[in-house]
Length: 482
Image (cartoon, rainbow, N blue to C red; front, side, top):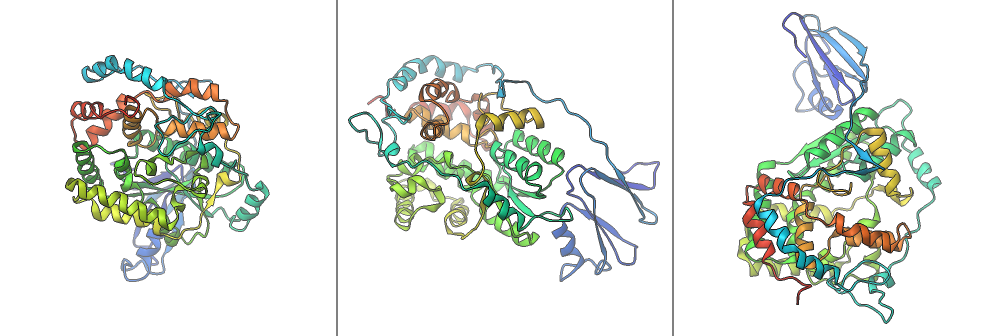
């Protein structure tokens, strides 16, 4: 803050993302959100004249400073926390608001009764929820699918191993000791909570905004970092360019719809892994923590591209595809690009970089949920009750609400194939014994409801017509109506 009646600058932080850099002579001062920025501007070829050999002062979470503009003297003070009013929650679950239906939505809802009946009539695995429209699915005489037969329950590594690994890096002076990939989703938020409150780490969060991070995710990130007093590095892409790339590919897809090419809409976020590596290098922190869990594996996305997963690939993370599957992936996309020249657009360099970032980088991360139990109800309870974590107004689930693209592509999958990511997610929960098949089936229709508000926001961000887009999707032949 700068005030007209005070010859002072007032700075404060609730996360610790604030560093003051004072020239050695005491005649200059600047402040920045990252220590690495300060170091770059105080040494080497980018150093600001007069600041070489100067002092870096870190304002820790809950601290402020009054800087005299005349003398540059500092008076550091404590900032008192204040309470915040959070959203309403019932039994740890979000309560979606009722969104008024617009004309196109209402017409689709009126026509969808027959389609929903057809989806309800789909043959599903007798053990999990996977329907007959799942790519490469096969059922045995008892009705159990091949995905269930290939599935091996994940055996968590001992939590003592996690503690031993964290102990190698845990700082004694409160300085950041691990970089946490922080999307603002429920898993990364809960992982951040555990690292700080249970394991005594001092995380430094990293996020990459590729143009489709929701405002809701940003608010939840602020809640988590503010209450925990955690620094947050935010790297933004060229948002205008990124959205133009997505728009070009969505418009190309609408001209010739193909379920196999839908992941192209999300290619722009894969540079997350590249920037994660660069952040680790810049900060000099040796430990990188990811909070993804193995329940989120969705083999149908590559399946619709014509790639059958091997038993080993069904059990591992998507980025661990074997060389043959990666070559099949290149062929699948390449052949579709040639069949629809509209994909030969400005987004190709970005897409290639994304593929390299996701499949080509050799990265070593610690995965929290390889050691820690993943309990959906407990995660929701902690985030909502302890952090006033905000839920989506148009979804009863807390999953994927930080991703602006997910409502759109899940709507396509559900409309055309009769299932979404939730079907595979719940199926994995069933196989792990986390939820009964009956309970999951009851939940499925509710969580698969189109998120109209989010879809409309998505089309608005990309500057494509909502009505035309939805009508084009509704006209695609349905896999369950043949």
